[in-house]
Length: 161
Picture (cartoon, rainbow, N blue to C red):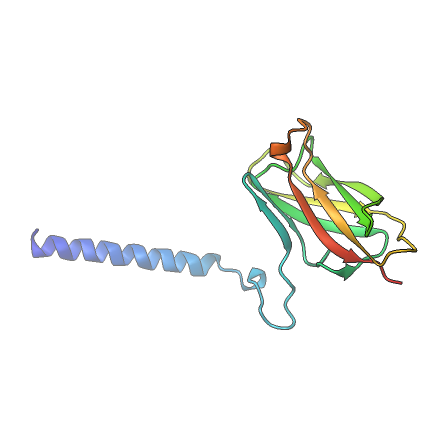
C-alpha cells in the first residue's frame, strides 16, 4: 500500500470514531442515566427470559416492600412473550400461597411487538390478618397452556400490621 493510502484510511477511521463519540454525547440524557447516589432510585425488579424481559418500575415496587391496597404497578416488557390480547395476569398471595387478589396488566401500546411495551395495573386485595408476608406473581398470558412458554416473576412483599 502507498503511504498516502494508509494516511487516507487512518483519517477515515479517526473521523468515524469521532462521529460515533459525538453521536453518543448528543443522545446521552443525564436525566435518564442510572444514579448510584443515595437520592437515586433502586433498580427495577426484572426477569429475563428467552423471548422477553419484564420490568416492574422501582417507583412501584421493591422486594420486601410493605404494600397496601390498592397497589398501583407499572413497568415495561422488552422482547415480547408476556402479553396475549394486550394483557397478562398479576396475583398477590399470602405466605400460605392463598390468592388474596388478582388483576390484569394492560399494555399501553402495541403489544404485538418484540420492542418495548409499557404496561400498568391496579391490584386491589384484602391483607391477611394471619400473615405479614406474601408474593406478587407476574405471569405471562399463556393461552397455549404449554409449560415451555411459562414466564413467572415472583416478588416477595410484606403486609403492614
